[in-house]
Length: 292
Image (cartoon, rainbow, N blue to C red; front, side, top):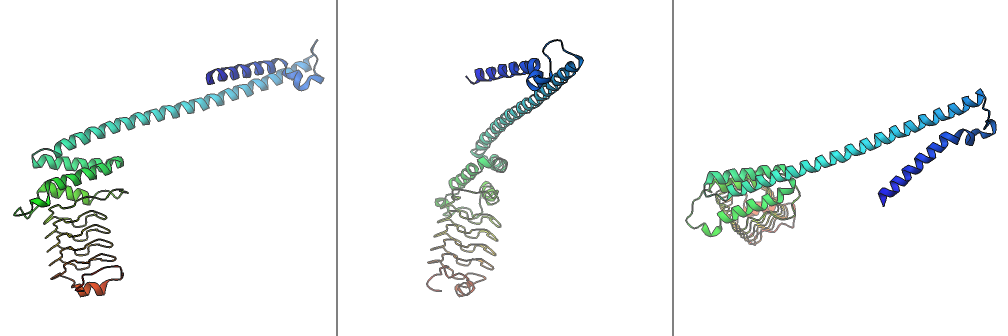
């Protein structure tokens, strides 16, 4: 129906234009023009009018041609962009599948390749950011279960450390879900300067871990084991450390604004005693152990 109306409108425009070429001079200046036995003066007026009308018509056609050319180019560009986006999505999907295959391999070197491939995907594709974070966190939870602590090695497997490093330096983007690393054996992990704000680390073993200048703002660490860890200049504002074990932890320059430390063990903490921490706090919402 729309096509029919467009054709009808075009026919009407052409018919009106043809009529103006034929009868236009008399419609505009009919009182001064003869209809029969035209004289040279009449011919000049008629020719001038028709020439002007043809020029106007040619200009309108040229403008319409430019408009439709521009519109066609825009449509072509949009189709090309859509096709390029589909191609890119397909390439990202292929890369993701290959990375997952590497991550599930039994050989540590293959796993490392998968981890760093996923990091590249996360940086290149904002849409896949959350998926990659979830996959890497699940990888850590699966291969560093707290139940495996016992007499296990004090040093993390290289691929676990690599996954933690990638998670700690992920791009700063809005994340709906918290990073979930609950009940994992991260003993001796190097998480210095890592971004783990809002992370769920309840019950984690972070003993002897390097946590210098780590960002743990609003993180969830109840009952976490932080014995002997280095928290120099770490940021723990708003974090939940209820019942956490910080025995012998290095706390020099640590930021504890609004931190919940109820039930935490701060005995033999280096850099700050419980009393020094209480004196240094600027926010009375921070909660200390009863011994403070």
